[in-house]
Amino acid sequence: MVQHSDSVDIADIEAARDRFDDESVVKRTPVERSTSLDELTGGEVFLKMEHLQWTGSFKTRGAYNKIAQCVAEDGTDRVVAASAGNHAQGVALAATKLGIDSTIVMPRTAPQAKVDATRGYGADVELVGTDFREAMDFAEDLVDGTDVEFVHAYDDPAIVAGQGTLGLEMYEDLPEVDTVVVPIGGGGLIAGIATAFAEHSPETRVVGVQATDAATVPDSLQKGAPISLESVNTIADGIATGGVSELTLSLIEEHVDDVVTVTDGEIARAILLLLERAKQVVEGAGAASVAAIISDELDVEGETVMALLCGGNLDMTMLQTVLVHALSDREQLLRLRVRIDDQSGKMEEISGVIADHNANIQTVRHDRSAPELDVGEAHLDFQIETSGAGQARAIIRSIRDHGYEVTHVNA
Image (cartoon, rainbow, N blue to C red; front, side):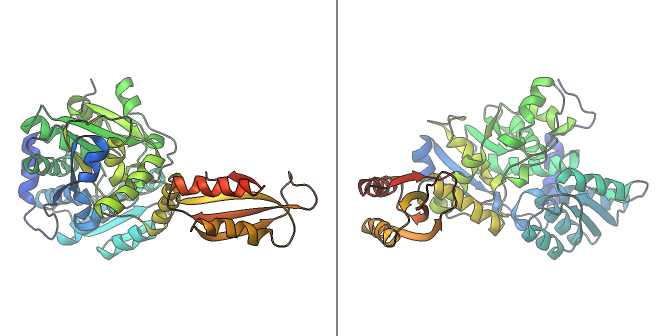
């Protein structure tokens, strides 16, 4: 078993909640039942809407608990942190509320909306490197040899205890819950939540979720030590830390029942599902819990389950990417390549076939340069809005019936 000298227990979590005496910093977030997810999973699904927290994520809980202790015990007047976005905003808000300065180092690839929000909460922001690790290295160098406090995103008992206050709420919101599903990045969130449930409802199953291309916990548990990734690639930037710590891994090993992974495609589907059915805008990390319960990786049939929506800071550029991917997967956004003799009237004829199905052509591109084409041939590349897979198949069939070679080119 992984050991860590500074662990976290229920007393630490309860003490953290006692420090949350200002509802403009940390508020209790609502829970809603989702009948749509009930139908998809066969269980009774409740959504813990922590994405409605101030700053749009749970991160303020840990940051405020950590900084409040530093101010009270050490007279700290400045903190430094590294973050891709959500921890940055949590630290900035907590520091400002406690009357101290903060400097946040963010990678240059951080969504602009998160950079702007962090500055809006009162922090000085420095953009360094292309990923979280480079930002972290720079931030640690800033505090090296100084008395400035570094606020780690997850490798700190005070941070874990602060995040654990969410576990207390989740238990109080639904004491009869059979399974709680929690996204994992660095592990601080699930470590705190699992510790709270271990005390108040040890029979509740606690399941962690990681993005497939950022998953470190399964290997870390197998090897008994934290494993890091050189690079991560996922739309769920909020859980793209590329590693866990000894502290968080030890608590996961002790209190978490299972860890599953979900693909970016599954996360995109969950984001769109939450937008359509629950009317909630949730970022990739926040939607990972729903991605898990609608995937084949996690069976919650017949159970009362609570999925944690832990973050709502979805960059609009990423939303566009997710929508295009998810709509393409559903074939509501259809890309077709039609091979034609390059003669006048062909585009009009094929467009008419598509119009006969009441589908909308978004774009069409005429290409004579593809190497597989013979002289006098061309491709027409259509992007079409459809009502779904049924209409898409009917359009393809009709174009072929008119004598054209057509290829479905959706990725």
